[in-house]
Image (cartoon, rainbow, N blue to C red; front, side, top):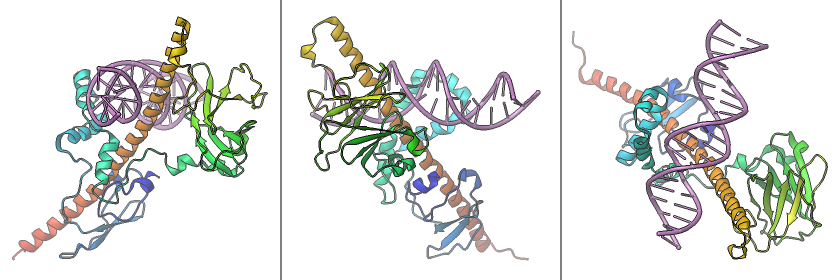
Length: 330
DNA sequence: CCTAATTATCGTCAGGCACA
DNA sequence: TGTGCCTGACGATAATTAGG
């Protein structure tokens, strides 16, 4: 349940975590007991039977998810529009819309700004969440030193001794495990296990990098197998361990240096490689962006749910004050 | 059960923005 | 100014849902 992860997206009197979907429609205030003078803790009963502790009702203005005045107002309006005003989208010129939307700050920026308001607001980190990093079925593997996930969803575990295990997420547990041993890996220096992965490229190969600046290339077309190839054969995909001339940074493709390119064909190949690299990076960026957007929207939804609770309490308190200030006289 | 409609997900492109 | 990153938009495809 995402509530478990995102209930602290903003600073708010709600201090108990709750796990219920569609809260904005289901939250109700079942308890009362608003205290005057001291911030009393009020129990808010959720339809699921869970309770939420709301401390006080009248408080200092809450730091809103919508912070900087204009830009983010547009943002919420955009989100709210998506369901109900599809017609208006047809009316709006796409270029104008693009201009408006392009001025929106990034989700990470918005949430990180929020995080500066209080310690309860988590920042959106670059790294993946815990559950993404450690898939359940990997736990059955033989104590790997490092586990990585490729952009295609495969899990790669570098075990002690240089054994690389590859797990397909679609398969059950060890069934999807593929193991290969680096013949020339040697013992990596402690703490230096770095794997860089790459998406499947257009030529059907999948690459990732292992310690020692070596490159493991998955080849689905069973292309040439060098002498240092260390992969399995048969139905399983083959892997090659190649030694690039230089330690590549985040670059993925072992491209020849521009100076060594001569023929137009080589230039075209280089351009193709660059394009593939760019597409791969953008693919990953888009995934990450969508993940952040989901997180951001969930924070907004939880904000709505909490504000609804707060609004109900304020209405209740207003009614109470009305009764006190204007008692009925018979 | 089948089919159409709706929703979700993904890859790609384009444009803005920050930074060296 | 070039480069890389971020993100909205768009189209394609898969998955899910509703209706007959």
